[in-house]
Image (cartoon, rainbow, N blue to C red; front, side, top):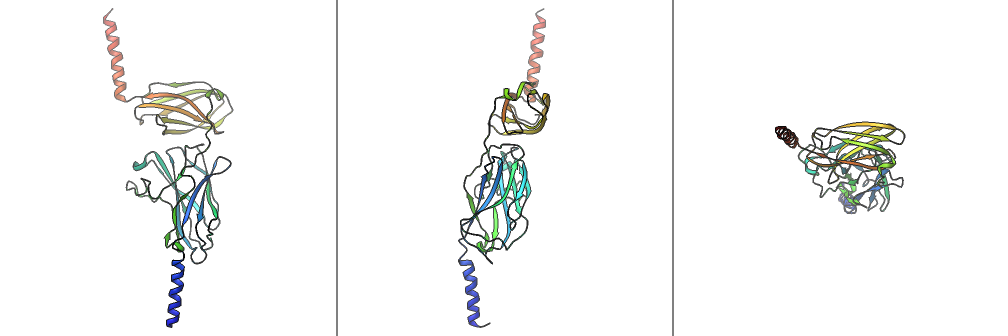
Length: 299
């Protein structure tokens, strides 16, 4: 190869990388107009065509309050960048108020061209649990679980593109948290009467109620006093009398709220109960026995 050819090749390589190294990609999360569908898109700051547009790997990670999001109706929306829903991590010790959800790029691609300013939908999904308090894209820089050592997991937001010499993701565009519209309904609209027992409770809790409407697939939530979901169970509710039992033995002592989320999306605050420790329960039994003995001595 002549000196001129060497110079030309070097200049071509220099132009490829020096002109594109500043290019960055953003992820964006939205709630669509139907109020049920979440959509993740990308926005590029630069134009990338061959060879700069070659995309080899990618990952999108979302987070939501624990037990509030269950991915359903997942769709990959771009034929040149095919995604799959491949992992979920529940309440890790470093961030135990949240669950994490990751989507991965199925294969590398050279046909998708990046256009500056264009917003490109990548994937969409719905929440089988109805309305979560919020859903957000992971922050690669600040999330406490991003460098977790408690589990061998791979999470984060990443898109490896030739033009960026590696991960092209700069961060998140738009809202930090996406919320759905949660309609709170008085229980009298759906529930004729109810009973929650025992209260205080120790190991098990029973919920009984008369459902006014037709049969539906609802979800019963139990939340602590801070609003964190500690139990979420799907419940097929029949018109008329219904009875459900819950194992609460692993819950800490305190006050908890019971809420039903109807299949149609309405949130129905139902009642509250007190969870007591076994030690408290033993103390209560002993107090009752001592009181009974004291009263018997009087007669």
